[in-house]
Structure formats: C-alpha cells, structure tokens
Length: 290
Image 1: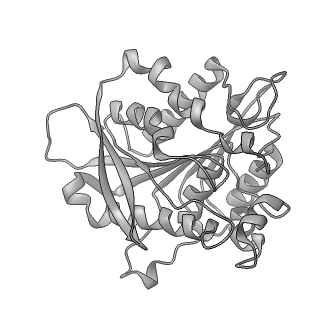
Image 2: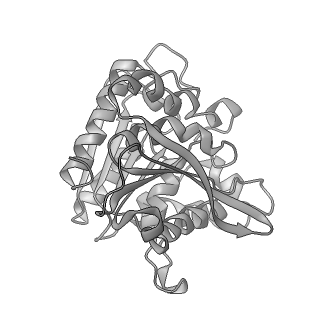
C-alpha cells in the first residue's frame, strides 16, 4: 500500500461501479439498514445491511461482509454499497462494515482488524435475527479491506470471546494487501504497537484457512502481484483451497496499463465484469448462490 492520499481512495469508483454496470440484470436490493454491531469508547460501529427484495423464506440466507479500502486510515462503508447491492441481488444478505480507521496514535490497524472479527461474530450471534446461515458467511475486501477480510480468518482470537468463531467461511480478495513484510505504510500506522510482520497474512498462513479467491492485476504497483502470488503459493502448500486469477494489462483494482496506477481506481469495465463473474462462480461452487 502506498503512503499517499491517492492510494488511500482505492475502492470508491471500483465499488460503486456495479450500480451502473450490473444493476439492470439484478433483483433490486433492500437497504441499507444501519445496525450497531459494537460500541467502543462511545463510538457506535455500524453494519449496513442489504437484503434481497424477495418474500421472506424459512431457509436462512448466505451472507457476505464487505470491507472497503482506504489504506487502513480513511474510507467509509458507503464505498461498498454498490458491491453490497450486487450481492444482495444474487440472494445474499450483504453487509458493508464500518471499522475504526488508523490515526497514527490511539487507533492502529490492530483496531481495524479487531473490528473485522467483531462484525463477523456479531453476524453469527445474530444470525436468526438477520436471517442468515452462520456457516455461510463470506468476507470480501478490496486493497486494505482485503487485509481485514483475510486477517479475520488468520488472526482469529475466538477463545477470548465466548468461542464465537470470527473466521469467515470464504474469502474474496481484490488487489489484496496480503504481504506487508517490507511495507513501510502499515508499519507507520502501527507505530511501536507491533512489528508489521505480525499482521502480514502471507507470513502466517496455516492449514485450515477458508477457501480463497484472489483477483489481481499483473501491473499493480499499489499491492503488487508478487504479494498475491506468495500468499497463493503458501495457501496451496498448506493444503488450503486458493485460486489466483490474474488479469493481464491492468493494475490496482483493474486500472488499465497506461493510466497512472496510484490507487485512484479507474477499472476496465470488461475486466471488472469478468472478475465479478469469477467471484460469483467461486461463491456458487461453495453453495453460497445458485
């Protein structure tokens, strides 16, 4: 992740685009309905819930929680509303999650990671009310948001929280920040709280992690392909299901080569559509959607 404001806007255009590209052939979604999933230091953290516009049914629905990008220190859940609407149109309950943003002082990426776990625990604890299947919760993240999604699986601390599992049942990671070993930006955000290697997903891959799909451009200079490849190789070596789909000629969040790849996503519509279709196929293979 680049230490610059432009690199931290990653996800705005990318996540809002589905409203334009896919809205015409999807069932309209109902939402967002804001619900508080945790209150920390008087700050209410909200889950923005989208659900399919269909008659209620007895069978619980699959769910997906979406984490926006923004370099771990800026952004807002509304950046994910377009993607949430898309997944709700496929018959899932989709949640755009708010999380604490690093301020290089009292709040670091550790707090954002804790929030990612907290919202998934909240989803499971309130599965009946939300109408979701607690065993069919996917986590979707782009850029820094992908770091939070995968961190919920890798850095789980369920034993300290009434044994409610925070690990999602599937991961979809777009241009993910998964190899932070030599990344100065997250270390700057962490300060003296921790060494960046302790929160680098690629350094902590183990057996038993959720099925994972990585969608990555080969010219990405914000979260380079090498990091995604390293994570993929270690996942496969550990015996986990992991798919890496590399798109040629595009950079961060599928920005075409030749356009400045500085984190401001200008996704190639064709590649973006192909990637979203790949995500749908992945979810279908796991029984999330038909």
